[in-house]
Length: 205
Image (cartoon, rainbow, N blue to C red; front, top):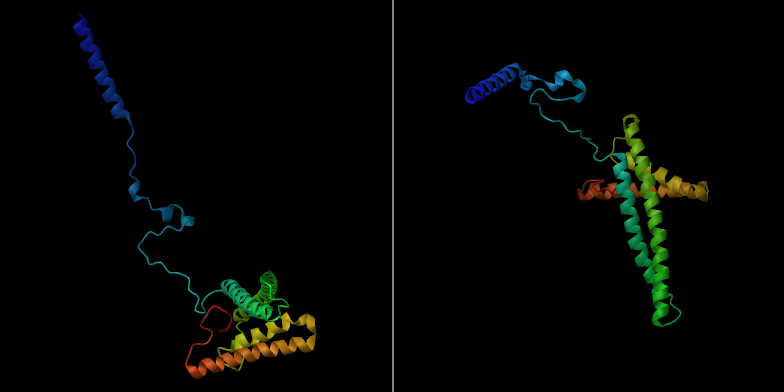
């Protein structure tokens, strides 16, 4: 009797397993779902397409050029002003003692580096912002002069004008003319030597 009861129990368990397995739902096939059709906002590509990257034919944008020019201007001005300050400090030392010489070198070098670095960095920032605005306005399309030095010359004039605006109109105009003249001279030299104009990330050089 016990063996018969165990056999009935085993058969009942097998029957329950078969009924539960047959009643379980089958999972759908998700391989045919296209995400681009279901959710277009995801911008999923349904076909193999090439990727196109944004490219600016004029090179870097206004903000990238501004940051690069300002950094290079501050670095060049700091190094050049620091070296010139060290030279003037050596020539103007009133005493031959070592501590006095070191103090004079540090004072003159630090003063020259900070002044020159701040000045050139500020001019570079003003020039880069002005040139970027001129490029966005496409002012060369309305000018009879077709030259790559047009925007840099105008930007240099406006940058010099703004930098020396607190010193009076005459000094500001002179600074603007010096900036425009520097661009014209650089363009003439690069044209004669066959070099590319404004080939670096620092202003119009």
